[in-house]
Structure formats: structure tokens, C-alpha cells
Image (cartoon, rainbow, N blue to C red):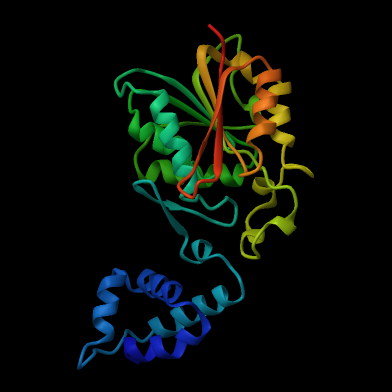
Length: 279
């Protein structure tokens, strides 16, 4: 079977960009090269095992499984992160949160203390360590399976992060022992499954749902004293759902944070809230 024959056979099952993504994954060739090969006058046959592998992947995707779980990877920042069904799939809108984090930590040579709570695949922690190599980064998650993926990603890019298993702040050293210049957190913030596209519902519920209104983990962070874990003048930076800026900002205000602000992603949707510990 040739590439063009396989392509024509499977195209009715998936959008073209998804089919090309899968074929690119299994052939190891960029999509631009695949498009060129589709129009070759005398195409070479594909390896015998390739059509069956691609067809099986297309069937999984047609049944609703996320592409990233089929390929086992997701582009994010400058990385191709390993992802499995044990972790939330990192998305481009989270990159705007990291852009704000880097603005808060402008000195690439300073040994900042950074904590990433609910690290999942390790996306936040690894970007911050890569961009601020002198920083000491601690990353924690309740899920041991998620931490295993995060450790694989750190090893893949040879980045040193202190990974800890535990429930929110309980995973960090007591604040009597250590404080942070920045704490970042992308907690579960979806209210109900009805708010999600079908393929997103296949991602781990532990990383998605934050109570009936999506605010459960923001309430816990503030009630459990996240302010005390920051250095004076240190910042808390939270990823949020697009309708949660006002409610999360009010929680931070009640907890004693100052200079509270929020920002948007590239789609113009509210994506983060930031608060500062007073000096």
C-alpha cells in the first residue's frame, strides 16, 4: 500500500489535520513532507506494518480518544512532553500563564525558589526550570502516576526538579522551613462534565473537576494558608477557568493578598489570577 492509498482510505474517518498528525507520528516524517509525498508520481510502498498501525490509531481517534494519548506526546513551549491517560494534556493557553510567571522572575541568574502545585505532566515546572536555570523548582501532585510521567519528562530534557507526592500544600516542606518567590498552580477547575467536549472527558477526573462551581481547590489553597508559604513580596499565580477571575481574585483578597490582577490568553479569555504577599 502507498501513502496516498492509505490516506484516501482513512480520510473519511478523521479531519485531514488529525489524520496527517497520526501518519506523521507513525512515519516520523513532518506533515509538510507527507503532503509532498502524497503527490509523488511514483510513490514507494509503505512498510508492511505501517498501514495496520495507522488504521488502528485512526479507529481509536474516531472513537473519541484524544490524539495525544494515542501518540503519547504533546508539544508545549519548546518541549514534546510525554503524556499518558494519567495526566491532563497541556494546552497552549497555559503558556500565557508561564509568560506571566517569567515576567515575575526577570533575572535568569537568580536562585529563585519556585513551587508548582498540581504539576501533572510537569509542564509548568519544566518550563520554569529551563527558562530560569538557577532557580530551585519543587513540583508536587497528589497522583503518583502523574508524578511518574513528570519525572520521565524531566529526565527526557535533563532538568532537575524536586518532585513530591502529596495533597496541595501538604506536599511542600512546612512554611516554617522554606518560603517561595513564586508558587504556581493549575488546579482542577471544571465544574461538571457537561462543560467539557467529549474527548476532554477522557482526561483524568482527578485533574479536571473542582467541585460544583470549580472553585474547590482555590478555596482550599487560600484557607490552608498558601500566603504563608511565600516570601514577603512573593507571588501566587493561578491558572483559572475563563469565568472565574472575579471569584478567585476575591478569595485571594480575603486571604490577605495584595496587588491582585488577572490576565488573558491569546483567545482573549481570562486565564490567570495573580496575588502578592505584602512586604
